[in-house]
Structures are given as C-alpha cells and as structure tokens.
Image (cartoon, rainbow over all chains, first blue to last red; front, side):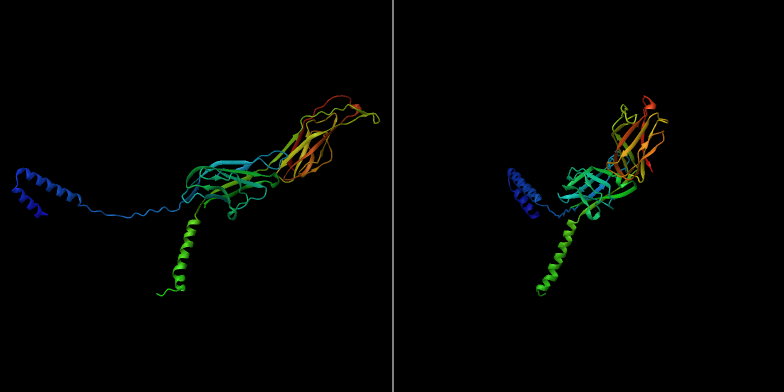
Amino acid sequence: MKKDVYLLIQYSKGLPMKKTTVVAFVLGSIIAVQAAFAQSTATQSVNLTVSTVYKISTSGNPAALTVTTGTAGTDALTSVSDNSTTYSITQNFGNTVKITANLDAALQAGYTLNLNLASSKGTSAGTVNISTATSGSALSVVTGINRGADAGQTISYTFSALASAGMLTSTTRTVTLTLTN
Amino acid sequence: MKWNLKNITLDIVIPLGLIGILSAQAVYSQQATSTQVVTLRVVELNKIDLVGGALTLQISNIDENAGQPNPAIDASTKLLWTSNGDARKIAVGSDVVSPRFILKIEAKKSGSGNGFAQPEVTLSDNSPHDLILGVQRSAGSCNLRFTAVATAEQGVGSESHLITYTITGG
C-alpha cells in the first residue's frame, strides 16, 4: 500500500498541476473505498422460549352465607348470596382451557351451594350446583377460555337450604378453582 | 456396534417413547389452582302465616227443636308454617280474657307437612292452647275451623277477638 502511494506521488511529480489534482482525487477515492470495506461482523443466535403459563388467583374469601329467613308454608328457605370476590387468570396454553370447581367435602342433603363465575375470555357455565362436587368430580364453571388474561371477574355464591334439612351450625368448605386444559 | 432389532428397540424406540410420554404429560397436565373458604350457616327458623284475613261469625239462625241459636261456622282460613327445628308446636290464643260468647277453633290437618292436630280448642280465656304438636323440620299447612256458639240467654251483641298463633319449641 505504501509503495503504491509512493509510486503515485512520484508519478504525479512529473505531471502538470491539473493532472496532479486528478491523481490526488483518484488516490483519495481508492483510500475511501478501502476504508468502506474495512469492517468486521459478529453474529449471535438468540433463542427465545415462552413456557406454558397457568395462573389463577382469587381476591379472598366470601362473607359468611347465613340463611336467616323463609316463607311460611314453603320448605325452601330464602337463599343468600355473595358476589364480593373475584378471580383473575392468565394463560398462554390454548383456547380450550377451562376452570373447574369442587369442594373439599360434599354438603349434606338439603343444603345447596351454587357457584357462578363470570368470564370475558371464555364461556361461563352459569349457575352450577357444586354441593356434591369433590376433587374426583369437579364441575366445569367456565369453558373455552382463550389465551390471555382475564382479571377481576365476579365470583357469585348462592347458598340455600330446606327447612326439612334442619339448622346448620357454622360450617366451612374449601372451594378449589382449577385452571386446566 | 451392530444394529439389530433389539438394539434399535432398546437404544432408540424406548428412550424416544419415554421422552414423548414425559413431554405429553408436561404439555397436557398443566393446571393451576386457587382456593376460597366458604362459611355456611342456617339459623333456627320458625315461620307462621295465615291465608285469609279477618272473618265474621254471625249467629242468626235458631234451632227450633233445641230452642237455641245455631252455631256459626267458618273454615275459610288456612294456616301455614315452616320450621327447621325439632319438636315444635303451634299454639293459639285470644286476647279476650273473659269472652261473652263461646269461640272454638280446630285445626283440620289436611295439608302437607308433619304435625298432629289437637282436638277442638275453646278459647275461653287469653291463655295459649295447643293447636298442633309434633311439628318437625318441615313446611306444613292446615285449615282452621272456627265455631261461634251462643245461647239464647246471652242475648244479642258482638265481640271481637284477636287470635294469635305461635310456633315455639314444644
């Protein structure tokens, strides 16, 4: 490279002024072109993975459901409801995800616990009687849930009882909501 | 290594099969749960009600053979109850301490529910009298038969009773 430039300079010494300018211009262009091609590259492979995400949460426990009144002559007492709690879900698995519900133990005959989950990403099954749904017989309460998130959807409980079932001292049941495919 | 059916099975098919099974389980057994605790309670509850409002018993005919006025009878009132307790009873009473005319009441147990109708009760004072016993965890009903009786010696007049029905522990 240095030799080439030297030769060009030497050559330009014997040329008139105008030709010297042309030679300098050509020389500058060659250097510029060489500079343009004087670069290096490096590559990386970036692997992106999104794992299956299944999340469901509830906002707390509903208030106590206490049957306190009824109508004379009618065995079915006046039911009570609670819709103070909500659930939220996030899933990226597919569009056939569902939510099932079950109790830790079935209720005695004559007492009924209904559950209704609202949904904007799936289809609510409406009011579902979960009184006898246990872990081996969970019932679908929302089906066809699409990928994405659905936050703050209302959970409604309705508790009813028959007079013929008698009184019920304070009893707890654990309701399990399962987001599953 | 010499490939034969045994080697292929042991070295390729079985491992691939296991991987497949594990992958399928990983994909298809995805789930998440959340729980809520629900507290349920049914308090003791006793309800009683009447179908039929105020009624008038008018004694206006006389049994000429007996020489006394005929009783006036009304059976248009229906009594309804609901109780989730055990061994309840329904009592009836009037607010009149010393009635001038005789007023009787009888439960005609033709409706639903359990309980045992007692014999006809004469409301001769303002104390409660048993009307139905053995009401137990049920909703029931019966018809009420009122009978007003007067003698000729009692003359004419009118009297008002406020009848109270009470379902209580029996």
